[in-house]
Length: 113
Image 1: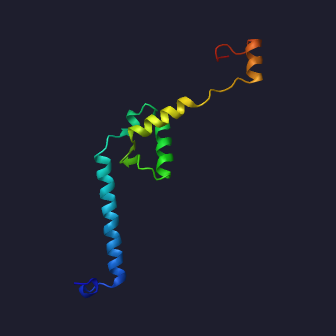
Image 2 (image 1 turned 180 degrees about the vertical axis):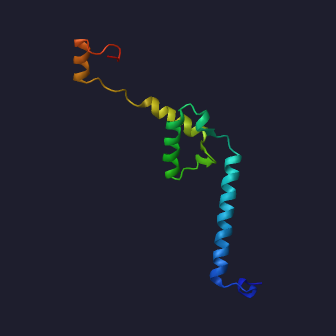
Image 3 (image 1 turned 90 degrees about the vertical axis):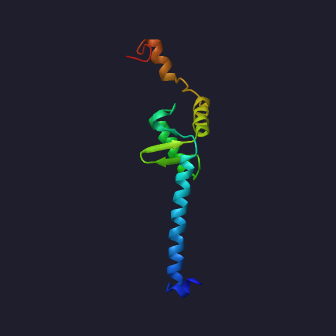
């Protein structure tokens, strides 16, 4: 039986099929989230802000290691580990000439005035 014999036009059939495919994609996405161990921003070693910043970066790139369920921003454990490693590799702030002069003059002691 063809879609046209059921009283649907070709455009209606295509729209119906696309809506069905979108529902299937959403269901598959939910199952993917349910079947994987995820790290929520509430339990992340990176803290809330860094976790959500990393989630946004991965989600914008279409990375499957980022998912969202309700208010939870979820990252795959390997994405958290990768982000923590990248954070550790960043170079520390280099002390400038002004910082050295303040220290010599005693204007800043232990980072406090």
